[in-house]
Image (cartoon, rainbow, N blue to C red):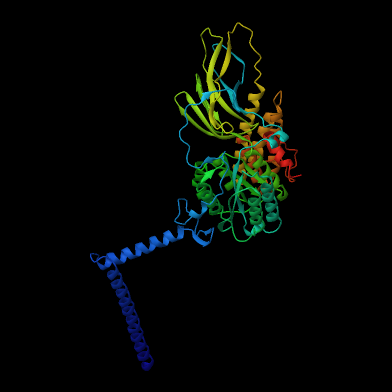
Length: 575
């Protein structure tokens, strides 16, 4: 027993000595490393500061390396964590290889300040106003609604339009080629791209950017003459699907293409199509959308199939002030692209500013566009207008009791300034007024039946708000609450004495929304995307196609309400 205890004691001492020797060795190694670090650092630094500086520098280098895109092959970039929101250190100088453009196009440099435009009624846009009630009793205060309507003249007949030279386009197509796009989805996207290429005119330019976990530019911004179409078609046929989804990486490369153009065509757009979920790009979107706007590119999003990130794409569309298109049936992607390109080919005005001076209290403006106030002056900025399109700005005004002798009350005066693409000039519309008739109590009072157009636009705004509320309930799993909100709005519309075609279409929209929110399953498998598509469409008063999903149980016609004749013409080319 004493022998065993002695052996254990000896082993313990040996182990401690061995451990001590190992620690001494490690300390010696670290001292040597510190000495080497000191010899490489400034002679004025002591050993402790030198070691800390080295550690901090290593951490900074690692962080910078993680944020920097790594060029894996020419034209392809992979991001270790997520795409850098600012300018990265990657070399994109090779992207300044866009084809030369026809003389009608403009330089890509920021336009100089334009002189004050002349007032003219001959431009493509006109402005009008309507008030909810034609007359109100004098001496009674009341809140009333009105609309300021911006209307673009319709496009020429399709045959005539084909003969005329339309405005050239720069279109950058950002395509998801992740693994979920394998098979029929990728084939249909290739067919849609070949349609875009085939229908493009020689002065148009097209670029293709693909993304999965990395982004690549298979096609530079190429003019669509015959050699360019051959080059573009070959790039489309080479597309292959694999990997995961990082939307922001694709947008980043597309923006580099747009920003590095040596010149630009009058109308520019980025078309983003994806079918996947992306947990990385959510916090990267706002700066990228802002860059697209500075580059003069509208940004359209297309969600492909029932499993894409509809919330993310809808958020992009909301910030970009464009529609979000849900393509539930994969065979309808061609129609969606055709409608989008048809709309872009018919842009008649850009940088539109609707300005009015209110002579009564302005309570609110209902519009998805940017609104600013300076005193009694309100400015609404609209990026562009398509031929035949209209935008209705719904205003809520507070009319005070009028004890004067005037028969009318001037509510506001409005006009619009914009860039006329066809004339390449700034134009201002003639001023229009919104007036309200005031009648004494002892005079016959008008029938208080609201104006049908104003009522229809109020309903449009309210339905968009209800869809947003219902979508929030659906995301939280509160489907009973969502159904109640939708049903209440539907009953309000149906209870009206007269219903306009717009209101009838909105009722069908609400019916379809209720069927989409029956359960968690219907909500997750297309219901959420369909509601977000409808919500953004009614806000923007713009759509890309009139295709109905096969999952739709109602004869919904709301998409057709906003489709222009030029868009219909392009969709019809698909056969």
